[in-house]
Image (tube, rainbow, N blue to C red; front, side, top):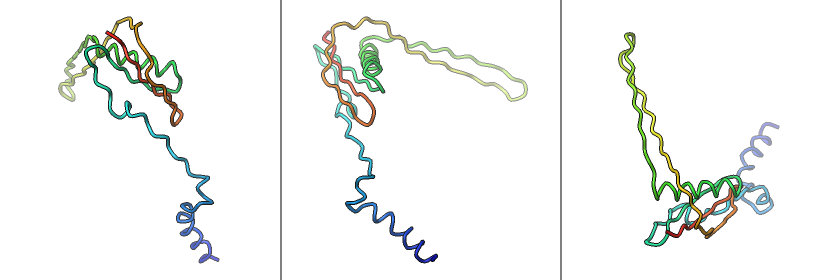
Length: 125
């Protein structure tokens, strides 16, 4: 009995590759090329890439990507604490702020893959 169970245990992974078991395989959808390699901005356009569980989340991230490329303020706060027991410790907080109204944009591509929404947005300068 042990031999039969061991044999089935060893054969199960190899049987998974045969056609009757292909039903159980979960293939991942390919990602759009702009997710793997961000498009470069040119003289007339800036591109933003965003992804999320919903269209609105992906759109918000793509527009934020554009705003960050156009203008961002980086602020850094460093604080040093002296502790007599352990010595000196320091903390640093870096914040990137973007404030820009982006209204002249076009959705170039919308892809749904692996439960995510991927957007490529072009903003005309």
